[in-house]
Image 1 (cartoon, rainbow, N blue to C red):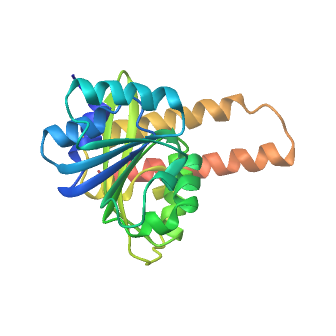
Image 2 (cartoon, rainbow, N blue to C red):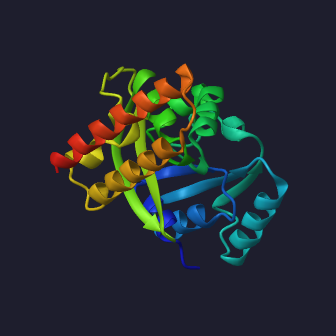
Image 3 (cartoon, rainbow, N blue to C red):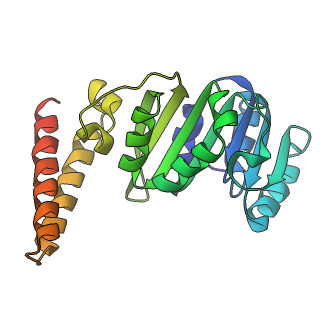
Length: 229
């Protein structure tokens, strides 16, 4: 079983611990790898849909890991007991959905030692939520897998609200601080994307004009970030 670069990057951020819960597990590849490389002793492979849970179960049995990985069917963190898992992985979903899963499972989430989050859309929504709700973004990673950028966050709840410039909702602050090898390319990609959006705004309504101003400010701030690298 060969993991994609995205999944390898997620696995690489997981701390050694007793148990990790993979929420939205799909094929169960991440929990399988975490057990095989001795990162954790036990794992929970959880999904809201029967199909992914069945696929995960088949893969887990084929690796003879059914004693260490428990497949569970259910929504978000509802399948995990408080204190049962030291780490949580929520990957491959939109930032809004990840935020909602955290909110709905706060009691479980806040007791975890760490969480790995990998939003496929709206990462800026998720980062803003994390900063404003007292989460510490410990580390971030970037990777390119099948010609697409993936942003991966490692966080922990510490009940300390951190005020940051809103541009760091768009680009992870730790990526800038550590001068991640892909961050300049990523920022240029975002600038290009925003310029295309600007070109597609044809209306002259107040809403459209406000949107243009907002995007131009983001582009300016992104260009300033590039100069810091």
